[in-house]
Image (tube, rainbow, N blue to C red; front, side, top):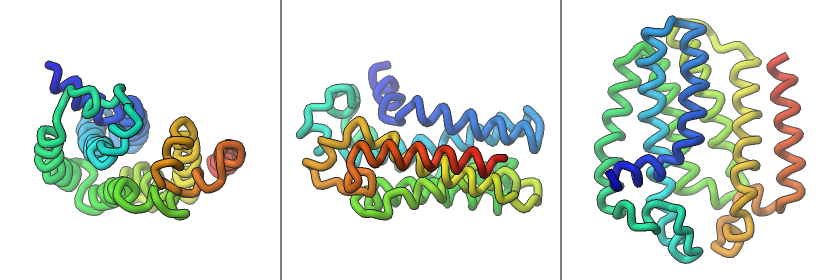
Length: 213
């Protein structure tokens, strides 16, 4: 039980649940509730990979800052245990999405978003281009569902997704910004600082709402 609690926490369960719920909402719009649950399950599996790899990669940094709320630092799970679940879930997520209602092309687009999440964890979070993976991933989520119904994703969908994704990045970084800067994690928000990151997030949200309209 303790290990599965650790897996849940390492998945960044709150954001994972939010993304899955958004995917389910789009899926019920384009499909119906039956396939929508299957699509949401595939989305959930992909988000687990992003969250788990983030905690695994950040383990040493979390230790240095004594982040005891993180399951690896708290000892709920070990890096080896988490790594095994990542190895299992990665091919499973591909199968669940490519062979599910999203279809091959829709599944590929969604997994592109997951690949962007991994690219952020391992590379982009240290660069001024750190918002880019968020933009692509958040645009890919709803677009993959439209593509699964052979519909060209409308501009408001992918543009709004990209803008909200970048806003989410700025908001997510603010709470740990001081510690990130000490650790040499210098994505765009860390380079701009808290005040300008809040301003950037506000502007991006406003632009995202305009895109939806």
